Image 1 (cartoon, one colour):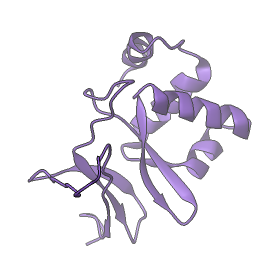
Image 2 (cartoon, one colour):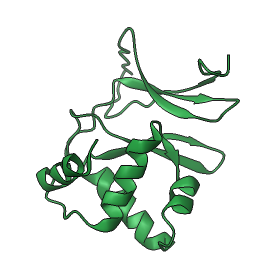
Image 3 (cartoon, helix red, strand yellow):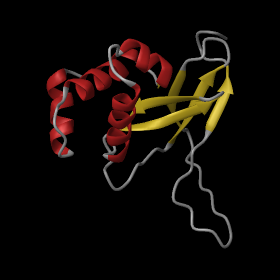
Image 4 (cartoon, helix red, strand yellow):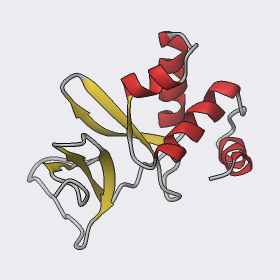
Length: 137
């Protein structure tokens, strides 16, 4: 994703293309998989923790990024697909974390999951899967 495409995505979501937003989205895109909060913070220096948190939360709120995985007090973030919006995050995939290299990726499903619970209204389903990635197998 080029910087102009990132700027266009921000514009469509009524967000200014600030240096922090552009930097974060470029790093997520170039990483090729989800990035942990600590890695994002490390690579975005100098940025204070509150500014980074607010930047992430605003991009999540606008349907541009999503929480891909949470493990051992670490949160991983990834760029959303084109179907996500401010009102609706659509993630028909699982989040896979390799136990060896610790890479987190969003993987498409061969068959879609349909989950229903009697007497409950489900708004979101998140599936986390652990194992060995193709490289580490």
